[in-house]
Image 1 (cartoon, rainbow, N blue to C red):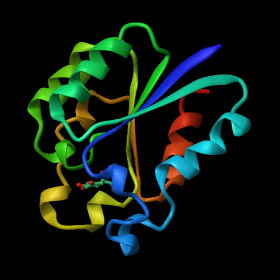
Image 2 (cartoon, rainbow, N blue to C red; image 1 turned 45 degrees about the vertical axis):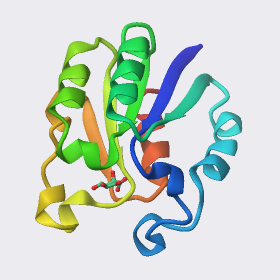
Image 3 (tube, rainbow, N blue to C red; image 1 turned 30 degrees about the vertical axis):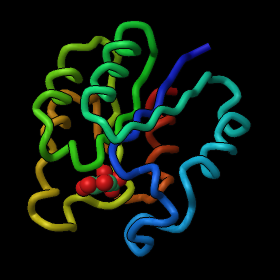
Length: 138
Ligand code: DQA
C-alpha cells in the first residue's frame, strides 16, 4: 500500500479560526477525517508544526521511504531556504499545496523557494487542493 504524508507548516493548526475569508471555516482535522474512506488504497498520515526545524526533521524522516509527500510549508514557502534545501535533498517526490492562490495575493507570496524542487504545485482550491495533491500520487 502506498504511504503518503501531508506536512503542514505554521498557523495551519488554526484553520477554521484564522482569516476565514481566505482559508475557509473547516478545520484540517475535520477535513482529514473523511480522507481514509475516500482513498482506501493508500495509507495517509498528517503532521503539522509551527517550527521550521520540525518540518525539516519530518521531511528527512519520511523523504527516503514514503511514496509521496504533500507539503504546505505555509509562510515558510516564501522564506525558508532550509526547507527548500530539505525538499531538494530527499528522494520522495513532493507536491506543494496551498489553500489560497498564492499568485493572486500580496507579491511576497508569489515566490515559492520550495516549488523548484517539487514535482508540482497546486494552489487556490481550498482544502480540495490537498485532495488534488493526493491524486497526483495515484
Ligand atoms: C498558504 C499561503 C501562504 O502564503 C500563507 O503564509 C499560509 C498558507 C496557503 O495554504 O494558502 O499560511 O500556504
